[in-house]
Length: 315
Image (cartoon, rainbow, N blue to C red; front, side, top):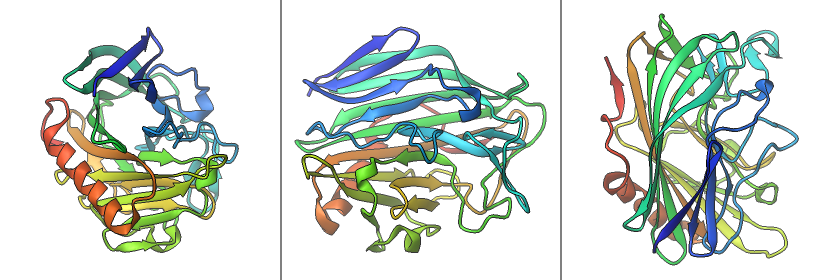
């Protein structure tokens, strides 16, 4: 299926499959400083047209669809909102950084796929350069019910000192290791089913466990239809298989969290790379069908994506 790209210059790229909008990638948002401005994908829709993302929910206004968000990069917060400080819980500090679009390096729709690539500067609240990032997104339709997004990032430390990348858990908060590629689902997905290769169940029971992939199966208001999101971690990513941060009782979210319980030290000049597949499917495919969607995502990781260094940490 041919994918169409609509580029709002200096703002966003929308990707369509026929008449269905799959996602809009906002690479230059108008986000306020408190929410740590960064690119995000929203709205994200299935091939049936059901929206499977949420933007600026009242409980966490810094949650925006799918975004690459890191709460503890050295002393800097590229997640948004207050920072976890052990003994004081969450404190609003003057450390909300921004991931700022620098230049578009690739934009095409051909051979049944859409490709977006750009460079970003991660800037501290006081204006210092922290990270130089190269990012690529690739999307293609898999079959009549599902499509896949490949997300790749290469982050180089340009801060002048070692950056310890962590999470609230590495700072002392138990089982709160969020940070990484974070998906926030629709309000109607609250109470939905979370599944991993080990089985399915309540998100609280699965949070913090290690797995190659996690899935979320939820219901939509109005139509009553179901949709499924599957996130797959590339085998070459640091800390693979990662621990996962997920919720379903309070709200719907998934996050492969490579810094969940162990900080990753990134020396000045070093580059760390990550790669993920996100499968977006119409319907509830059941336990076996959801595992099959994960297998499709795993295959896409090996066949799609922009040329980039192998995932991991390089000098």
